[in-house]
Image 1: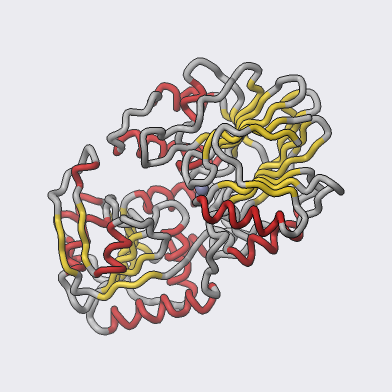
Image 2: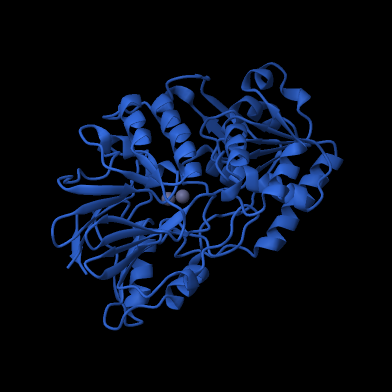
Length: 434
Ligand SMILES: [Zn+2]
Ligand SMILES: [Zn+2]
């Protein structure tokens, strides 16, 4: 009977990692991410004897950030796809560069990870040991994101990774009908307690507000995560015929170029190309010297205003009553973005970051600000629907709720316990047999 050990990303979002072990002791690790808070930034130390493979659901650093650590003293095969590998490399380098935490690995281990990578196409069953297989299945979360089906000792375990069952402009949605009958499910719980607003309406409302602000002589700053969210916002503006200028800067620019090099990962590459053609890429240096020149919509990381090239624009926006700052991603409690939305104050101290130091600032916002929930995760309704539509073998309705705060993971788990599933919100280090 296979064992599942939860090394991280349980009752929290961050440092996701799961170890699956066959009855003969062969192992594989799914994801190995980092988190940004606390003393423990990495997943629990895994036992890597007889480690046959490492596989990645997607490039976000809460899933990929600690992968190089596994290459300190070993060279196991690493299964991923081209777009996830390329963007993981960019994000891991970035986290090594900006973090004030000293990670127990560096560029050398990252190179070893890259050298040991193998690309796996969705739907292709990859053998990693006797009676031990991995298959990638589209997860709909961001370009390149997959769920991983593990077949081991004649049992099937599905690890959802981060999933979205709703279509976005960038991604095809995850679909429970792509999944064969399973014995166990490890599922994310990020939005198990929240519902997203209807997508189309929200998109229209967002573009209306942008157009209004611009027509009234203002500018719009959209601080967005550079991976996927920036490009999604760009496609939304294009879809609803926003005709003004669009500027893109920082990581968003770099990732857009990677997407163009990997058209297979994008739902509608023609639409993205068209939108990018109308976009002016701007360098951080040019922004610093000539902020006011950029008159229109500016899409610039970071999404929670914790740093990034958005910092170069922020003062000129905060002080302008005609302009607007529209946040488009989840804002963690205590982040500068959250405080700006709730209290209208922008408070920021760059001392926590090593480079590009700015002074501590605190500004009362004169500009308009709002939040548009363009999430890339399934919400409470769609998550439950997805799980209910999966087929479990009789008497093996095992569900493990991970990747969410303690309330979300335990609530999702108790919902399914009450429906007759064998459901649990595991804690770190716990081992289960299936
Ligand atoms: Zn993610
Ligand atoms: Zn995640």
